Length: 89
Image (tube, rainbow, N blue to C red):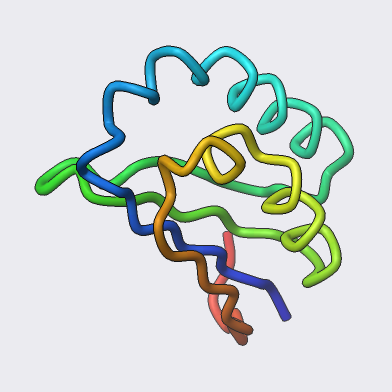
């Protein structure tokens, strides 16, 4: 079981992305180094959100709680869904 975190961005606050990206990226790197974040990235067309794939719900919740994008209001909606992965490489 994996946990998919999805973000919906607040278009009014997109200028905050550049300001908070270094700290957001550091948080991504921290969770990836701990092997609790497997993949993450933004949607491209339209650029209205992002997803992250976590190994546990607790890791996803911890990430969200301290993510500068969330804390700054850049993210207007967050969801965590269980994902029953059946095909891997």
